[in-house]
Image (cartoon, rainbow, N blue to C red; front, side, top):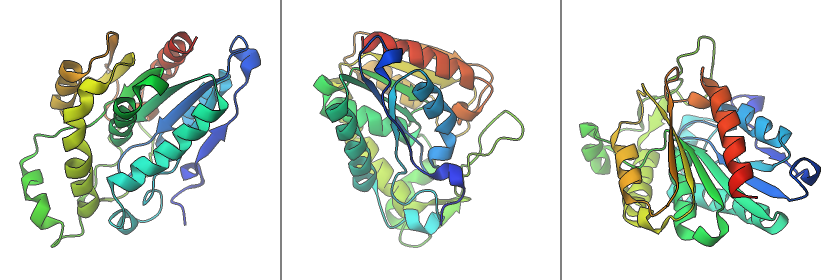
Length: 256
């Protein structure tokens, strides 16, 4: 059973009448322990611009935190790839967007399939951490189910991303060792234009991810936009409208 109805996947067809006759697809991915609820306003905003939008529910998410310990990076990436393939088949050009873990997943896609990705938009993506307790994950994941959660790092009062109350350790290990580690090596394969949104104050993802991504990718165009009034889940925070507007303009341009 889903945490909330807004955790359901979101899908919208292209409206080429709004995009100068060209069918443009946009893949949107939510973050670790979260669900489409955190990305739905962004996805709906993009759909209103005429873009075809696919926002899948990543395996193990949106239900109970224990379900996330039964899956890992390869499952999330497979689900995202299926949605990407659908967009590629049905549209003239496709851009990809992600928050946090979703940002890492779309960067993985951009590294693996650079010729099919017209542009990349990421919000506080995670590819690294300086947390010392992470070094114990290879052993801890067999001893402890989960740590206290990372949900609702949102500055705007009254907002709820409907994420898990705990961070499942087996899933966290898979994300960091099976996902982030090889991705950091392959970031240089990314050549697509990148629009990078970074919250000034983020209590989940530290500064090292931005530094690593910016230093390593091969993209000729790398635009960084600061989010001064938002925490980690910026897609539901005070700067959300800036993300919606700037990303729509970027996607329209790189997919033209």
